[in-house]
Image 1 (cartoon, rainbow, N blue to C red):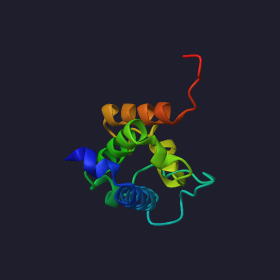
Image 2 (cartoon, rainbow, N blue to C red; image 1 turned 45 degrees about the vertical axis):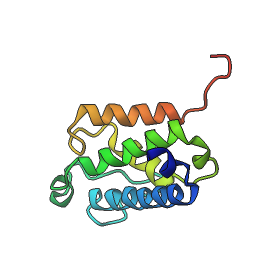
Image 3 (cartoon, rainbow, N blue to C red; image 1 turned 90 degrees about the horizontal axis):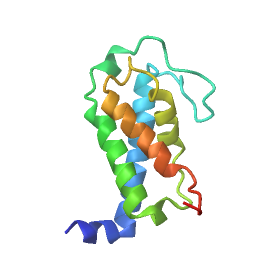
Image 4 (cartoon, helix red, strand yellow; image 1 turned 180 degrees about the vertical axis):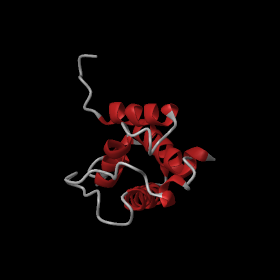
Length: 124
């Protein structure tokens, strides 16, 4: 069942590593294959998305975001100490770019993931 898979920390660690690679690849394709987006965020995406990026289905990105939300809510201990820079850069690069991510629903999911990742106030 799904609980058994989620409880397998080794498998879920591999899943997170896979999605980090997907995030890095999506950023690379979006920047035209150049190192247009770095983890430091020094360079922005091109004003017009490359054809290679616009030809990709948006569910590539949606699947990644959905998995990150799921892991963050159900097995947050997996993210403790995990390096998620690529995923964070992906969100920051795309969240306000309707030319890159046309779905407002998907951009809202990115905002939801950012909210889940923000430190929570213990008083709430």
